[in-house]
Amino acid sequence: MLKCPNCTSKDIGKIGPEQYYCWSCFIELSYKDEMLSLHQVEEDGSLSSLDDLFTDEERKCDGASF
Image (cartoon, rainbow, N blue to C red; front, side, top):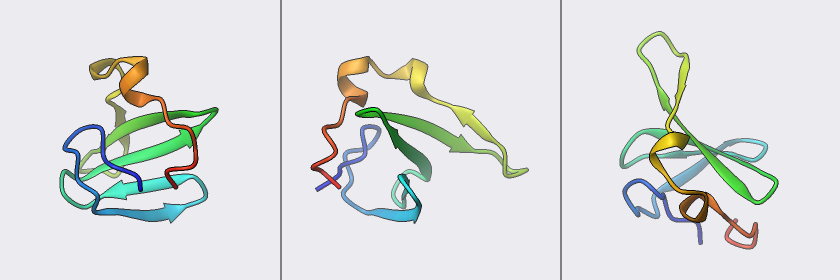
């Protein structure tokens, strides 16, 4: 089961193909090439990357978690 790398919550919802949303800390997660990309949703609806706050190891995902 997928856990949020930011808050470790399992309260993750699917919002699109390979796109997920953490309902606990309100960040969007995208899965591509065995890596998660994390984004904060801004007030205007745009996304700001949070990838620089996490190591590659923290963002790595094998796909079986989904």
